[in-house]
Length: 138
Image 1 (tube, rainbow, N blue to C red):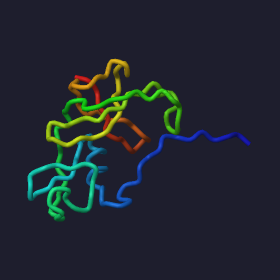
Image 2: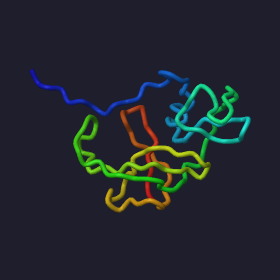
Image 3: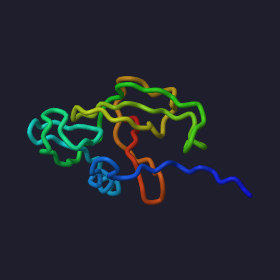
Image 4: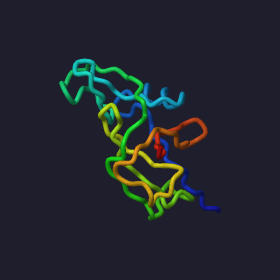
């Protein structure tokens, strides 16, 4: 019997928190994050309450997808879903809206990605119908 290769892992929407708006935005090529209406601040990762006030007065809003590399590393060790993708640059990006998000940096030599570089959102296709935010250097 042939051994089946593991594909790219696809996150399950709304496992612990309602994240449908995030996935709907991603399908349209829009980066959508939670926004606290009481403080006027974005938060990421999604939570059931505001990290600023503890209230449930949250909504989903589109962000620019532009930001600065806050931290970065290069994955060189094979793992699930990484076939043909190594070396792979991964960065924590501080978006212009003030929130940090983790994502792959695509389309550049991973060893050239550095703290302080400007990036913008692009999309990493996890499957035929699911894409996830990634970044590219600008």
